[in-house]
Image (tube, rainbow over all chains, first blue to last red; front, side):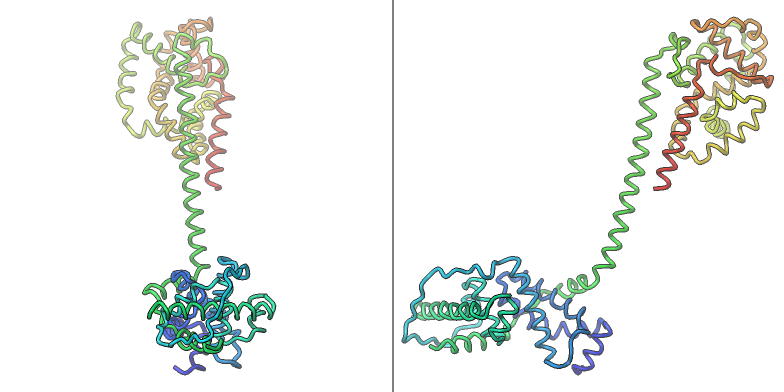
Amino acid sequence: MSEPELLKALRKGEGKAQKYLYEHYAGIMLGICIRYLKNEMDAEEIMLNGFVRIFQNIHQFEEKGSFEGWMKRIVINEALGFLRKKEPLHLAIEKEHIQLPNDATVESALAAEDLLKLLYDLPAGYRTVFNLYAIEGYSHKEIAEMLDITEGTSKSQLSKARAMLQKRLVDNETTVY
Amino acid sequence: MNPEDIDKLFKEKLERLPAAPSADAWARLQQKMEPPKKRENTWLLYVAASVSVLLIMGLLYFNKLVKPETTLVARNNPPEQVSTASPEIIEQPAVIAQNNILQDQVNEEDAAPMAALAHDIDNPESTVVAATQKRLVPDKNKAKYYGSDNKANELVNLNQSSPISEAVATIAAEESAVNIIEVIIKRDGSSENEYGNSAEELQPNSKKSLLKAIYKQARNLKNGERVELAALGVNTEKMNAEGKNIKEKISKVISL
């Protein structure tokens, strides 16, 4: 089923097309949610809510950007909404002074699960900004709008997140050897 | 390690994180898709449930309301005190008492009417009799009061009491034993002549005078004359008011 055909069927509200879309994207969308929300049950719930929103607002999608990008944005917004309610995003206070070892090199042999664990160790605010900027590829301007913060805050949160992750990665390396 | 390298590392590994939704996720999604319909159904269900609960509670309350009243009056007014009956006392216990007296009298003085009585008492099971008596209950007093034509009144009674359903039926059932005898009094014309003559002097403080009064009224009824319910120790207004209350309650429940 081509994308225009799929979109046409989705706009008609055909259940078959909805199931097709779900089967193709549920895994990807759940993978996104898991990065934002530690709890797997929450992540799945948000993923499902995202699909409901996609189906209900399918007529709002203008075929300018990619359909997948539009869907991701919806699911991410669902996740952010949930985080706003559950975890105070911007109350993340820097608890430790991070000193970076200059010669630290990190092998990329780490599995996705290990990286996910490192991500979970970040305060919710850091994690969210890092997710949006580093992995999703949004600009600081977009992130500032999405999270209702200033661009400066977004930048500083990102750099703190990076620093923390780098420290943890190095610690990880040293404990391994 | 540059900050960009960290970004790259995480992006590579986590951008397409493999994740499998649980098996029932699609079913849950479908449930989320159609909440309005479901909500409407459950809403209707709740309404139906609450209405039925209200109905049941109403019936229970009504039954409670009636039962204690009758038992209370029966306890507080043993047959000896019936003659001094105040207007508040409702009719049934008084009638029981009167009927007891009647039976005593009959036993002593006349065997033939007793046989008739016994015959009638023996057949309370007959549903036809019971049914007519039930219909008679709420408007018995009216029947006596207007007393010109019993059959016509029964017809009226039938029409008036038809909307009164189970609730009244239960009362009627309770009173049916009483009513069987009550009906007999009306039909018991042969014994009237014997007691009718002396029924003039009313002494409200004795059983005998009350019995006489009843016979007098019964004769009046038979002859198509005016029947004084007050002489029987019966409060017509209260009976009618109670009947109206019952009708109102039931119509309220139905309109709900």
